[in-house]
Amino acid sequence: MPTPTQPRHRGRRRTHTFLATAAGLATVAALAAALPAQAHNDQGDQDDHGRQSRYQDVQLLSFNDLHGNLEPPSGSSGRVNELQSDGTTKTVDAGGVEYLATHLRQARAGHPYSITAAGGDMVGASPLISGLFHDEPTIEALNGLDLDVTSVGNHEFDEGAKELARLQNGGCHPTDGCYDKKQKFTGADFPYLAANVLNDKTDKPILKPYWVWKKKDVKIGFIGVTLENTPGIVSAEGVKGLKFKDEVETINKYAKELQRQGVQSIVALVHEGGFPASSNYNYDCDSSGAGAGISGPIVDIAKNVTPAVDALVTGHTHNAYVCTIDDPAGKPRMVTSAASFGRLYTDTTLTYDRVTGDIARTAVKSANRVVTRTVPKAADMTQLISKWNALAAPIGNRAIGYISDDVANTGTESPMGDLIADAQLAYGRELDPKTSLALMNPGGVRAGLTYAASGAEGDGVVTYAEGFTVQPFANTVNLQDLTGTQLIQVLKEQVSGTNAAAPKILQPSAGLTYTLDLTKSGADRVVTDSIRLNGAAIDPAATYRVASNSFLAGGGDGFTTLGQGTNPLVGTDDLTALADYLTANSSAGSPIAPPAADRITIVR
Image (cartoon, rainbow, N blue to C red; front, side, top):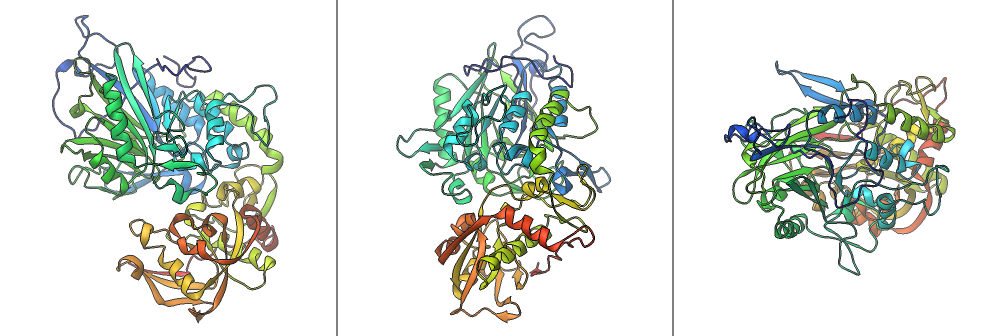
């Protein structure tokens, strides 16, 4: 086995017959049925008497929603909450591929049957070190981490299916060319699975729907899907020519196909997730009963996916959980998620039965592990980061503004979201002085700004790289006219329609205020009579000039009314608007203060 800080050495391009190295899926203590003593054999193929063991433990290491975070994420994005034995909560710094690599390599030691899998969104919405280079650095890092397989996520489609195919297969970017003149980008060593993403002309998956891991007589199939609603949260250009099918129907279809091929052990990689009752990564969501501590879309999916699937590795919601949810036969099944940004990985043990070829589900154990920064850095990842940082430095190190304190990206209304909305309002008024307000979608705010220096720039200095981490999508700032009636409807769409179960609260520019009453349900949670713009009630018959990013202006995130505006005007990209605002409104001697985030009055 490799030493903790060195990668497993294997061929550059693994043939996708996938006779990979080791596989393992972990199990949870809540699944309590006893197995024969030989069931827990993770060292090899034989028992203590030299006979082949019936049961073989397979280690599955998994993570999700890395989003190109190669360097340790800053602020709250780089921390996890850990529940202590005395009931208190401890905050732990976590993340960074230099540490993730070490943790994974240490975890694999002593486990000849080990697989590493991911639940999507490995790329997209990435910091500058990766996003500036169309996420080639992240693919290189994942190759170095010995990732075996991943599902696609919605962010894999940010730049469209052709770019996703390039990340899989390699080749220079069609516009920007090759970044490394010495070595052509060769793509991912691991398969991206996209079982429910179809070419709308051929009706066939755009990438492999499933993949089978094999070692000797042990084989486990993996089916990969992204959420069916991907077109609702990705730009129209990114999903052009694609169809996204129901997650459950797709998984069940390919589970039958795998079984026909003699593969009885199956894991679903599902880029859709849930909401645990606690933000502590080690919260036991089965403490009040199997699956009682989790809600959200993944619950319905897990309850309907065929019992032929033995475990679900999930993602998308950036939450951490290790839960059991009953399958359609009423038997508990493991469902896991490792938060986001490489702060955690899930260690699962799957016990493979050589007689049936299936997983002994009552023996499955699973736990989330923190990617602490107290272990040695993996030298190969440090070298990779240094290489790409050197290429990004001329752009990324440029100062664009100054802040007096952390600008957090936390809360229903966040200081960072308000700051972006203020910047877009200011830019909108440069384009058209009649611009009334700006609205920013919360999912487009990928991080906050940290006062402490991340490099040599000095405390309080905001660099272009830091701004890029906050807003990496390259959306444009668009203007359009909405009636007062439409504006009120936009605010109600935050908590109704497709956003009823999981509200998406738009971040408002200064001057727009209202009350959000969470004791009510649906659209009634937005108190219509409370909506004010610069102190005046919204006039249903008046026209308001609204600034927003191009994703929202196209009706994204369920805001269909925003897609019905008139008199559109397309401006510059949103990061430029933020950078220009910071430059114009701050200096070393007069830094900008974080907005108070008091524009929405919340009643709970």
